Length: 548
Image (tube, rainbow, N blue to C red; front, side, top):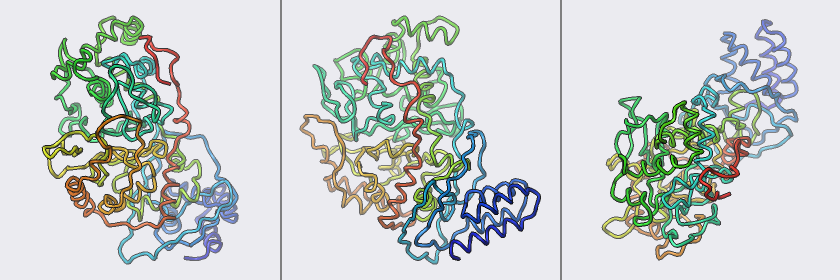
């Protein structure tokens, strides 16, 4: 590869040679390239490409987008990229990941890399996605979202009236709960400070990590929960598949509204234990539907609160008893409105309106290239929404106890009953991922670098895993790491991971490359979304206390 300076001169000369159809763009590009400004030159070529110039397309691929050797130090010029008002409806053309960060950052910074020689095999390259924008999401229903805001924070929806949706998906904790495995009903406090409390104190952890809620209102969402047990029917776009059969008798606006029906049925999360309340008893007796079912019991509770009934009547323009579908639709509308994250530096980069740092750019090159992350974290949502066995260490109570006495969580296979899906879990989406740890379906990793190294070779990672889960205090006879020390269970998980990894090349990354990947993950942070829009309500119509 030519030295950086001579490359810039070549690019500037080439841009000037493209013609004079857009002289201002070309002049700007020429002047910028003399200062080493990749952003303006790149934008000039993109404008000419959109105008139909085939030479511009060829030069974009040759100069900016084609694979090539990487210098061991990249000095970025002291000049920030011009920032234009974001137009979230504009979709940037799909292109290959650049071989280096194409745009300068605000200040001079040198990135030292230890780059191994490129192999003789064809390099891995994945297309960059389109940015998230208004067209990616359903239209918001602000009136319904305001009702959902109150219901989301109201413990009225739990069997013992002691926990709300917000406890496990709190705005202060990046729409999660900040721990590996949380405590649901029968506890008080938030995150690591949550403790068993009262006569009905929790005695068991929730068996899976609380997933973040970012961008669940996107049109492209087709599976929800770690095991995908709520999903769209591939044979019927209007139908949804759930653990309890079709819900055609409910008018549910979205897949997210369907998902909102299920945490209230979990004994550990919100319902409580049999004998503690009518909701828990109904769930235990498998009474979910009908006038005496768990959902109807909760709907009657909400209907008995005048403020909720009046608000929902005003929204629908008709006064009738509150139904569980109204509650689910309202909560989904709030989640869609509150937890939308599409103003990350990466999305701004894809819109071509702002630069990302040189480290993030190099991390992006790895993510869409050598590291092969995009084989699963693909598309606009950075998830293929499929299920992969990635050898996550089993911690906590698991979802089921088998004859040998140990607990386990077989993931997707429990939904499909297909052994090929053993220990496979849904690929998570990645906006605000650095704020939503611990990571993994059981939150086994609190160190993101350890998580990434494990992901590269999960079979080896299972052997070397060091306990690092973040767990609220709980007096129990069960060892949270007992399953992770069970040789028989680990052999099953390892076998599933080996089958999964056999379908992709083994990737080896150096520590500095892991650091660059982390820098790219940081570029997936949306600080505006994290700050929140509505905040925590001062009070809820039930009058029950709110965890703040």
